[in-house]
Length: 332
Image (cartoon, rainbow, N blue to C red; front, side, top):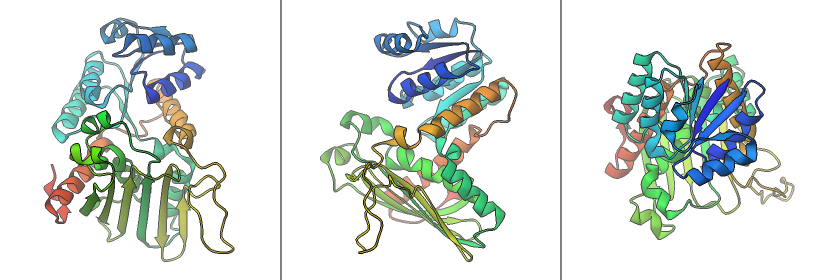
């Protein structure tokens, strides 16, 4: 199998390494808006570097992985669909609903598979939580708490291109909430704070956010995120039911200290970032994509899932700006 990968930044270089090691991937061709960067990644992995995207598509590819800058995702999905190739796309497909729908439409009309990169679906903890909910082990689920905390803000230049904290960061929590519970969000109430570094205010974004989400069966969920969690990278989910309560992401590397005299000790080596925390999940999602391309498995995260998560993010952004609850039925 020959796979083309577009984008060799931090996540793209990681994906390139995974694909280069995969036993079913015979050759890998990479391209980047900065050709030198693509050449460096290719050289380190024994892959081939294409000078640009057009040259990459000139190869006899079996599939394409899109890991480029967010603003280019939708265009590249459409381009790949036009070439009748299966495509894996890092989230998001686009930063707005029309762009997302246009890319989905192109893939559907071309009859190609589009897998989205929501890697938490492949994390062992979230898989176990989904099984616990679906099996009835927790009883009636009444409360879910989701947390995503980055250890440090991204570069200032990234913020205006990111889509904001809800679309760029919390969208993962919105997707995994739907996937674990099997329920849909029907209403949100969200707020945010830009009291941190000035670059967030300058970009019209927030550095910390919180949302209360009501699910279609009455379950209440909270989702919080911050770009300024100096203790380390912290991603957790707590699920409470009438019978039991469980947590995802609570282990010896969780950057959370107890002040109780007999509480657990602080993590000696807290998670520094998302690549370290979710490395096995990233590898598993690309393995799933390879199996999808080979016709050995169904699509584990269809691109339409991106649309639903983005609708929730859009509702939260509207709620924050207008200081009111927003029904999902009124979004898109």
